[in-house]
Length: 59
Image 1: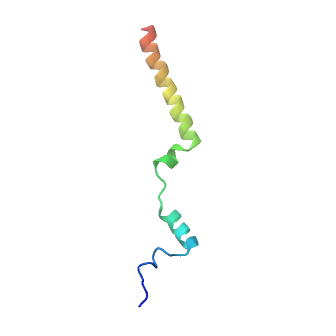
Image 2: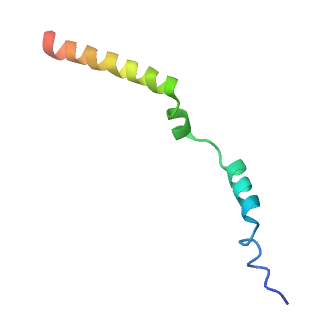
Image 3: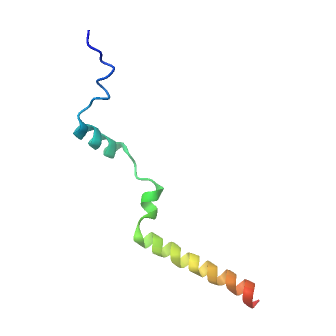
């Protein structure tokens, strides 16, 4: 009788790669890698930094 426990792990590599890419959802790191979002976050960060430095040094 053949051992069927090893058959699941011995799938065709092309099928397993496509199945992995289809099943894997894109998460938060994919969203953060988008340039418009990073520019927006950098602008907001600079505004917060300028406001905090203004409060600390000039007031």
